[in-house]
Every structure is written in C-alpha cells, then in structure tokens.
Image (cartoon, rainbow, N blue to C red):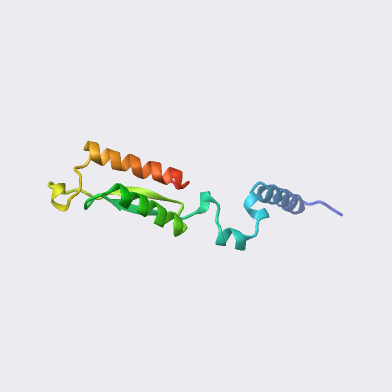
Length: 117
C-alpha cells in the first residue's frame, strides 16, 4: 500500500476523532437514557422572576420544589422589582434586610434540592 499525503491525513483525522469521542463519557451512555434523565450539568434552567409582589418563605420553598419536580436543574434569579414604591404590591424594597434574607433562603433551598441558583 502506498501512503500518500491524503491517506496519512485521513489516518490522523481518524485517530483524532477516535480520541475525541473516547474523551466524552456521554457517548458511552445511551442518548435515549440521557434525554429521559439528563445529568445535572445538562438539565434545563429557567428564569425565576422574583419580588414583584409579597414574597414568603413558604412560597420560595414551594417554588424551588415545584421547579425540581418539573425537572429543572436550576434557576437564573431575576429581581423584577424596579418600581419606586415596591411596598405598594407588598414586596420588600430591594437590598433591604428582608429582601436579602429571601434571596439567601432561595439560594439555600435550591442548594438543598441540588439545583443551580
């Protein structure tokens, strides 16, 4: 067999591809199984709009549990309270001690559910 530049290049490309695929453990698993039950790194995350109305500890805990039960891997926290009078809707003022307490509670609850926050 005569090795030309093309056959050598094809051999190198094949070796690189083989090494690349073996580096990804995902390929060893069934894609169907991963689709049905993705690992934490691949679970979908959602925006969590927070703070427009009154926030309670019970509401935070219920939201985190519902998101986990729905299969979400975490949230991107978004505080949507941008009014000049947040208390008009029953919400805490942004960066107030109660607001910080609720943000910390949400992060702690997410962590306990092994969800990203």
